[in-house]
Image (spheres, rainbow, N blue to C red):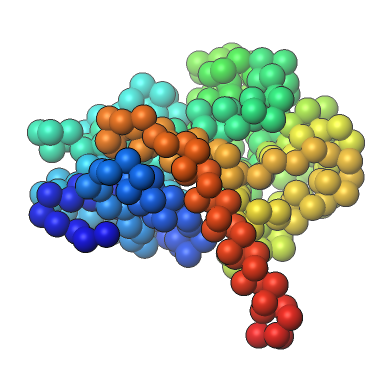
Amino acid sequence: MEIQITTKLIALLGKPLDHSFAARIQNEAFAAEGLDYYYYPSEVGNEDLKIVLEAARAQNYAGLVITKPNKVFVCGLLDELDPLAAAMQSVNTVVKTKDGRLVGYNTDGLACVKSLEDAGVRVKEERFFCIGAGGVGRSIAYTLAHCGAKKIWLTDVISESADALGRDINRDFPGVAEVVSMEKADLVRNVSGQAEVIMNLTGLGMGKSAGQMPFTPEIFHPGQLAFDAIYNPPETRFLKEAKARGCRTLNGMNMNVYQGAIGFQLHTGRKAPIGQMRRTVETILAERAAAEKRREETGG
C-alpha cells in the first residue's frame, strides 16, 4: 500500500521480531476493511523505548504494539493503564488518544483464554502449570486468575519474576497462585502431574532457541492439554514431546489471531475481520512449510 500523510501508523516494538507475522496479518486486515492504516515492525529494546514513544506522540500514529522484552518496562512510560493492564503490570497494546496521550492495554491474557476455551478448556474448573513469568506469562497467568482458575503454579528461570507474579495474583485472588522453583525437579514433577493444563510461556522454542524446551518431557502426562504461546514454528519441541506422551496440544496461532483482533478494534474502533486474519496466518504457515520442504529437498 502507499503510505500517505493521512495514513495512521502502528509500530510493533520488540526485539527480536524476525519470527512475527503480525505486520502482514494486520495490513491485510486493514486492506480488507478499506482502512488507511499501516502496521510495521521496529526492533526496539528497553534502552530506546522512551525515545520511540515520544516520537509516536508527535507523528500520525494510531498506537503501538509492544512485545518482548518491553511489555513490563513500558508500563512506567505511559500516561495511563487500563485497569487489567495496571493490575498485571504488563502492556502489549498502546492506543494514542486524540490529545496525544498514550494508554496501555493488555490483550494477551484475554486472547489466550478465548483460545483455550475454543479448545474445550473450562478455566474455572482447571489447574494450570505456567512456565514463564515474563511479559506474556504475567498477562496470561493473571488473566487466568481473573477468569476464575482453580489453581495456578508458576515458575521461571528468574525466580524473582515468578515470586512477584505470585504476589500480585494472590493479592487480588488469595491462594490461587503458588511459586515452584525450576531447580526442584521433584516438586516440578509433582505439580505437573496435578495440572490439567501445562503452558510454555517462555518463548523458548522459537528463533535461535528452536528445538529447545524449558523442562524434560517427563512433565507431561496423558490427557493433559499442552499449550505453547509460540505459533512460529507451528509445532515446537514442547508440543511434539507432549503429543508423544498422550497430551492434547494447542499452539499460539488462535491466541495470536484473537490478540490481533482485539488490538485492531482498539486502534481503529472497528470490529476486526477475524476470518480474514486467520486465513492470512494459515497462508503464511503454509508458505513457510513449503519453503522449508524445498530447502530440505535441495539441501539448501
